[in-house]
Length: 502
Image (cartoon, rainbow, N blue to C red):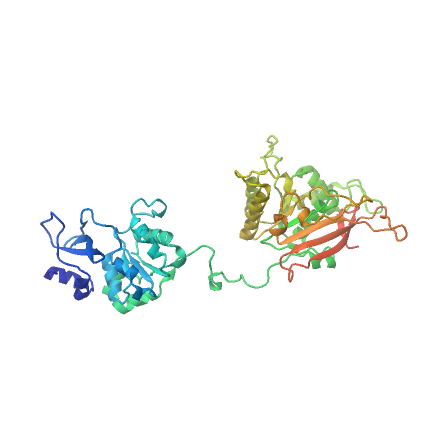
């Protein structure tokens, strides 16, 4: 039975007295307690009381039966087939659960021990053992609504329960301003408003699962494609897309490094952007710079017949200024600071990725070149094969490109190839790249560069001095905008160090 004080206390909380008594609430003190006015809330299992929680009416004091079972309050609704189509609502306290039941949500339970001070789902101890005991039953519940208090412990409990019960099926209840819990809403606004709060419950966020409206404005439309303009045929085959990666391969000395340099410098010129270059087989301040000066000045250092003499000091200064403004070196054998000793760095995958990220963020580099892949030290995990290491590493480059909206171009050498009887090498394809088929699977763009000289019409022998180069696009993820799979030709012009349209 409920005392007059208990009835008034329940009424002040907006709860129906008859409903409270149907769920067994009664005026009762904890064992051994003789002072104060208390209310007892029984916990049933199979129609038998297995625990009681006590609350003092004139001050905030709580108790439980010694040795009482820690189970969900109102546990029986978990197996009630008549309620199986309803979502299960979980509250932080029994009175909040009663408020929701009064608002029409019969399938409501409460946790037995309140909320923790901070999330504990990863180190639960015995706090959430009551969930483990009914986990098989809970697994059959399609939707779960978490109606915890709007305070730090309530947020911690919300996080714990969504982790333990599975965030994919969990929602949380937002309360009106000034209301901390479901019972507050009932008292201040009534049952209809509490029903509205539950019906407006929001899904717990699950990373990576979004509707179109969750994306920021401006993310629609066709993807951005950078065109270098080396030739019309080239532009139909090769499109560079920020946010993605590309893989470039070819037999040594067939021009893949030089071609990718030209792509880099052309993009920097046309788009007024910066590039980061990890050129592991060259020293940046000598070899790479000399190649860039040749391209920028338009002739070799010593000059070219009918095209100008040796480089002038003014030309060198202008070209070096351009390199300073547009190219950032990722250099494992550079100098740490001006005037310091030579610093050799082990080019591990972690170091390359960190350096590339730094160049993109600090220097606004939009294009990153890794040349060649084989110079990166393979720091494999225990039991990890080369194939799996390459796949994992390329995935990391893909994430870097996507998250920072840059493009990463990777040069990867082919494995040893066989020539035909005439000593002519066949062009390498994606599955000829040393190490893994992931070089085909992971990038958005895949290109082979192969020297394919013009032939004498009569003898069918390669013409001396011919620099015709075959460009084969074997992977184009977005062919409608990026370019079609197929091949085209360019000629390398030694005078100005550039590939041009034949």
